[in-house]
Image (tube, rainbow, N blue to C red):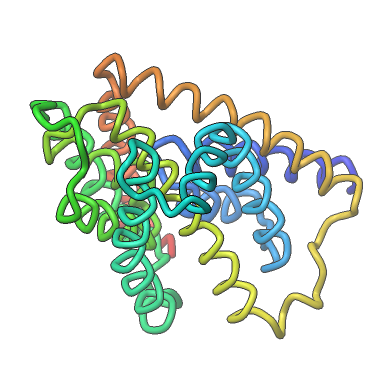
Length: 269
């Protein structure tokens, strides 16, 4: 039993670490894995895994974050990194609004295999068409930031990836790939922190249930989450800069079709 629990924790940790930052939706992949593994993750377990992926992105972009925080202290909003501050604030507004509306009205009913299959198809379309971005813009305007923020908010739906939605929306607006990559991940930091806060608040009555696994297994799962997450960010950067980010569209489209078939013909919920 302990071995089974350890294997499940490692598998879920790897899925969380990889799928949170690859454009394939961690929420949907965890939901699918839990269904077939017969494991119901507790809210506290999910919180711990998200803390792991948050730590990874902060560590990966630690130098950029340091420069941005220095610019904030100096009230410098016009330098290259200082401009990120108001842009992230503006983009976080639609992210927060859409995310809160989803959690309040849709979260309980929109995590079925059928819904995830449909959103996977939408995500695949975004990824595929992102390859046609012209990269004619070197800066992100407030309008473009709002669009990327709204895309990140829409990624509350399982099956629509946070990185896939924000990076694709940036590329479709013809922003340079390196700028899109960096802004997308920096924008994800307040969003993930917000997600953790909202989840902790909404599930506050269930957090006392514990994590559902032993502390040792949880620690091992976190280690795998961190390692996989760091690898995933490096891979995303390489694929974005080499114009191969859209390669994930085929996998997501195929998975979406499989989920729809399982839901319509085999009764998977």
